[in-house]
Length: 378
Figure 1 (cartoon, rainbow, N blue to C red):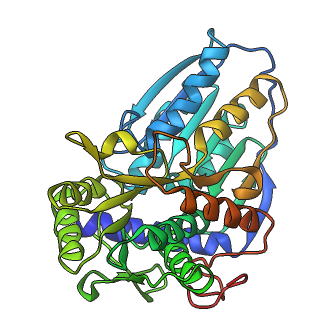
Figure 2: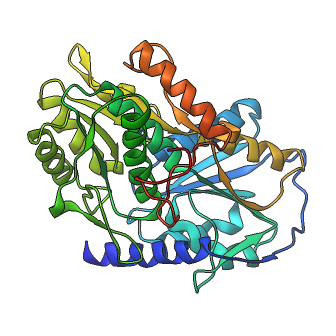
């Protein structure tokens, strides 16, 4: 476990450095896949493409493409450890066999040399940008890398939690304090503060000092961090500890560890959970009831399908892009029957979504000058 955390923290540091500067575009494309029946590999770790969450949402984008292009083929490849070096090796092992490789997660940032050495293969990265061995961001003609504004999804969740809590105590639970998770945390805390100021709520975001997070710059960011993305037992411990302090709405951004938080909520009374990345309403079933209030969304499947279609149509262009509410790439579940928000809360969320989309509200991120207590639009 210590080795895994060390390796991933090093990669997180590399991603932070990557965010601070870009490299020159390399690996000019040498082929044209227009009209070709694509051979696609989707590489995930360690929970596979049927995890009901992050990986599966990406896989659904591939499946949508194949539904519309039935001659295309996809092969799921699961790397079991989740370690960045193993993830990169898993890509290297198969790169010669596929036209397109879709890679799920931050651990694939190190595929830069593979992309440069294989310009005939196209890569779609989700939740990371390619970086060199020194952590400097790189762009390639054959790599489209998408990240998402988690601070926005966290913000919507914080507003929803503040509006719906009955105890006036809410919390966010995360896995490891990588930038993506800290973005969710800061966005959530900012959303609570926004609701308190503009909507008259009196919610408090509860943190457990013993589970405070330390980000990739060794800064204590507070919050509630399990320390792992696959530790359901500790997830349940953290969830129960927060519930025991009176928290009745929990925003959970903790991967597989979040299952333990869900269990704690199901075993308690009158506790609701906000899901993360995808619509988790089905995961919230608890007998005849459901604990899911809503879910923060990264619209990954649509964007993956879009890039695969671009490849097939000969329109693919390498880029590193941060996707936001401006392109409806972040959001929250508002569909009837998939959430339990009040009409008043839905109306207020719709109002602030437009403000975020227009850039009038900019929730803080891990490395921004803004904070949950002071940010544009508060």
